[in-house]
Amino acid sequence: MGQITLKDITKSFDDTQVIPPLNLDIKDGEFVVFVGPSGCGKSTLLRLIAGLEDVSSGDIVIDGNDATHAAPSERGLAMVFQSYALYPHMSVRKNIAFPLKMAGLDKDKIDEKVSGAAEVLNLTDYLERRPGQLSGGQRQRVAIGRAIVREPAAFLFDEPLSNLDAALRVNMRSEIIDLHHQLKTTMVYVTHDQVEAMTMADKIVVLNAGVIEQVGSPLELYHSPKSRFVAGFIGSPKMNFIPGTANNDAAFEIGVRPEHLLVVTEGGEFRGKVASAEHLGSDTFVRVDVPGVGEVNARVNGDIDVNYGDEVGLQINGPVYRFDEDGLAI
Amino acid sequence: MARQQTISNKLVWTVLAWILGATIFFPILWTVLTSFKTEAQAISIPPVMFDFDWTFENYETVQERSNYSRHFWNSVVISVGSTLLGLLIAVPAAWAMAFVPGKRTKDVLMWMLSTKMMPAVGVMIPIYLMVQSAGLLDSKTALVIIMMLVNLPIIIWMLYTYFKEIPGDILEAARMDGASLKNEIIYVLTPMAVPGIASTMLLNVILAWNEAFWTLNLTAAKAAPLTAFIASYSSPEGLFYAKLSAASTMAIAPILIMGWFSQKQLVRGLTFGAVK
Image (cartoon, rainbow over all chains, first blue to last red; front, side, top):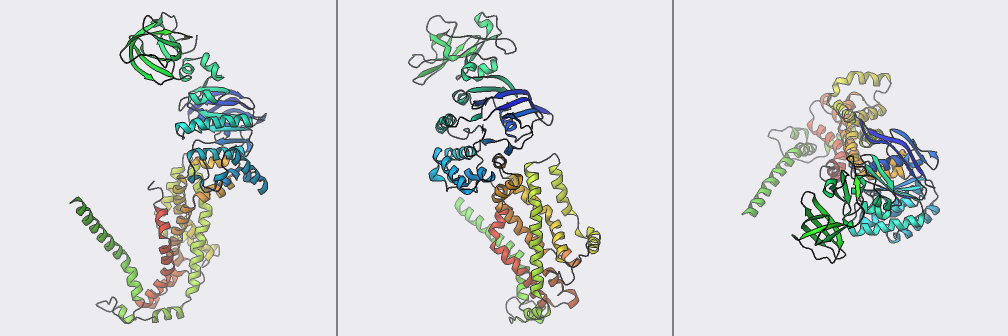
C-alpha cells in the first residue's frame, strides 16, 4: 500500500508562506512527479511528506493513517536524496543494511535482503567497497538499494539524477522506471527537468510558487495545459507565445508549439528571417525573427534546407492555445 | 632569476621559522638541561649550556621526597575524566546547535565563549565555597567536574565546527532509514566526526593537564595532580632550581610525548574546515 493524501497543507518559514493551502491525492502504485522551476516548493512539499519538515497546518494521511505529526521513520517511506547521502564510513553492504538494522531484523534476514537488493541493482561486486570508491551512478544505485530493502509504502526521490552526467541520467531514468514496474510501489519524484517528468510519470504535478498549477498525465498536460505557465513549462523546445493581435485573434496571447509550425517559402501566418537553423539530423530547430512578434521557434523535418538569413514563412499546422490576460487558458 | 629569488625567499622563511621555533622551545630545553645540573651549576653566572657534570641526583631527590606516581595518576584521572565527561555533554549540545539551530544559537555560542573571557579568580570564592559545602575539597571528583565546566565551551565550539562540516542530508537519510535520535548520533554522526572528536579530546586533555589555577586552589594532598607537584618545589623550598626543573620535566614529559605522537592529528583537527 502507498496511498498519500495531502489535505489543505501549508508551510511557512518564519513569516513567508512557501506552500499556500494545497490538496493532493496520490494513489497506491502511482508514479507521481512534482515538477517546476527552482524555488517553486517542490522539494519542500516532498520533505513535508517525508516528515523532514513539519507542516504549518493541514493533514497528511498515509494509507488511511494520520501521519501529520509522525516522525520520518514512522511513516514507512524511503527517500533517495540528490546528494545520495550515503554513509561514508560504512561499506556498501552496511549502507544497504542500515535501515534493516535499525528495524531490528536478525543478521540472516538482513544478509538475505541485502544480497537480493544488490543483485537487482548490479551491486554484488561492490558490496565491500566504501561509497567514496564508487562512481556517481553506482552511488545512486546504493542509495536506491538502501531505499528498496525496507519495502516502504512509497519511495520519495528528491532530484536523484541531477548530479549525474547526461548519458548516465538517461540510463538511470530507465532503471528507475523498470524498478517501478517491477515493484509496483508508489513513487513520488521531484525534478526541475520536464523531460524527466514527461518520460517517467503516470501523473505530473506542476508547481509554481508553491501552488499546484495543474495535475494530470503527461499527455493531458501537453495537449490541454490549463495555464500559460504549464504550456510553457511542458514540452521541448518551449511553446511560442505570440500576442493575439498578431494573428487576428481576440485572445490576449496565443501559444503554438514549435512542432506545430511548418517552415514554408511562400505564404504562412508569420514571415521573417531565419536567425538560426540547428540541423540535428532527425529534426531541425529553426529560429525565425518575425517583425512585430519576436523570435519564433519551429521544430521541423530534419532534411529541410534552410539557412541563416533566409526569408521564410511559418504556417500553423496544429492546435493553437489561447490565453487571457491572467495567463489562464481560454 | 625568478627561481633564485624563490629559493632565497624560502631560505629566509625557513631560517625565521627555525629561529621562532627555537625561541619557543628554549625555556623547555633549559628546564630539561637544568634538571641534570647540580644546584650550584643551575644558578651559576655566566650560565652553562651543555658543559656541566650531568647528574640524576635531582630526579632521585624528587622521587624520594614526593610521590610522583600518585600525582601522575591524579593528573590522568582529572584530564581524561573531565574530557570524557565534557564530550558526553558536548556531543548532543553541538549536535543540536549544528543541525537544528534556533534563532538564538549564535548568541548561545557567543555567551558560552564569553565565560572563558572572565578571569578564573573572579569566581574563585563562590566555587571554593560550593565545593567546600559539597564536601569535595581535595577530591578528584570536584576537579573532574570543574575542569569539565572550564573547558566545556571549547569542547562545544570545536565539535560544533566539525559537525557543521557534516552534510545534513546524511543525518536526514538516517532519520528516514528509521534511526532514532540516539542511533543517529551513535551510528552516523559520531563515526563521521571521529577525527574532530579525537583532536578535541587531545586538545582538552592537554588543557586540563596544564591547568594550574583550580588544581592548585582546590587540592591539598590527596587529589593534587602534577601541577601541584611542581608547585610544591617552588616557594616553600626556597629557590632550588635544579630540583624544580627535574619536577617540571617529569610533569610535562607525559603530555609532551603524547602531543608529539599525536601532532598530525592535532594539526589536522585544528585546521579542519579551514581548508576545503
